[in-house]
Length: 452
Image 1 (cartoon, helix red, strand yellow):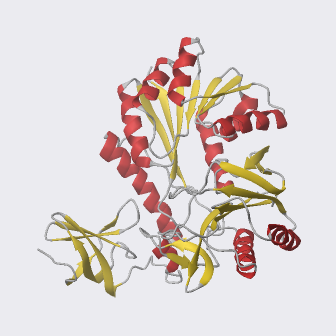
Image 2 (cartoon, helix red, strand yellow; image 1 turned 90 degrees about the vertical axis):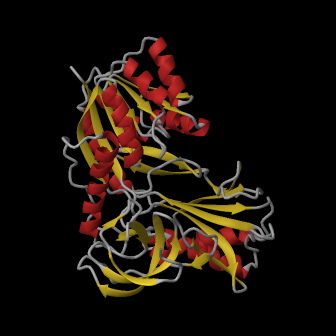
Image 3 (cartoon, one colour; image 1 turned 90 degrees about the horizontal axis):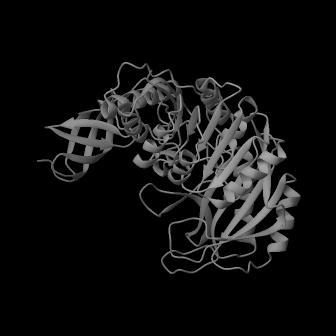
């Protein structure tokens, strides 16, 4: 049995779904950061259980030809870019394999080809949203990212996958907070004022929103801070304060106050304009979100007499993208503010053939079945936990011809597809889309068709 701090040579045989290297030693599986398949390393044992353990690299013996040697290791240590050490073309292959493996292991499906992952031509600096903690390090206020599995802040100025204008606004805000001696949050002491900085940027509009998350309402010299920032960033259209006085890991509290400008910024997606608030769910990679939604639209084979249910509709981005091509769209979302935003977005884009309700997807689906609404197409875009069994059964009761499933978690998607197949639907198409380059995350569009 291997003990902690033992050092042994190992060969990396695979990557886990989270991008950690996998090695096998005497029937045990070890997970190791910053290694790639085919590499041989001297591994130090960090933790050893009965069948699995964790290790770290002491020395590289053989390196992979697919290793990206230029990556700043801070991006790996914080998880900002936990696949950044792998060449981008290989990242796309890894994600395709991840989806195929999930479908086979969970649903026993191997007869449907998983298409090659759609990637970006410039797979960095793509994020339109950032949330960074503010803490005191060595006596100075810093912004950055927590080291993985910890609350130890690593100061960072260039975040690699965020738009450079977002990084610049974070850094300028950090410098002003220092200058005006505004106190950073201290988790242990439960003291200090500034907890987090959140920035959103419209991909096409270039409009910026800054959210300061504070422990209490009063911010000393806030007018001067805003004057300095708006002078330096002409596209800064909105400054919001969010008050979170709870001892919690949740970033945002319930109380929002508009300190400057508007409470939303605007951006376009597939030709429609959207109002985006501080709490809106809006895909963080606009370029690839357009490709994701266009893939879903193409898979759905829309017809002018289609009745569409858009489950987990958010601020309406998917349903409104296809509404002009169909008869009617019914959207459901559990967050009341998002439902209001979806209705406003429909109105602002001159789209009248949509109905948005605030409810759980399960409840709305059951209500629509009772009301005799007969969708020909159901589009689902659930959170990472996937769909509930009750939703899947209710959606099958509608006897819709097609179900287009957009997923951010191949494992829960595969589980849900297994149940859909048992209830009379057949998986026919699967397309991974790389919304999060340099990370292990992957989005997938799948099409299920009712068995004839």
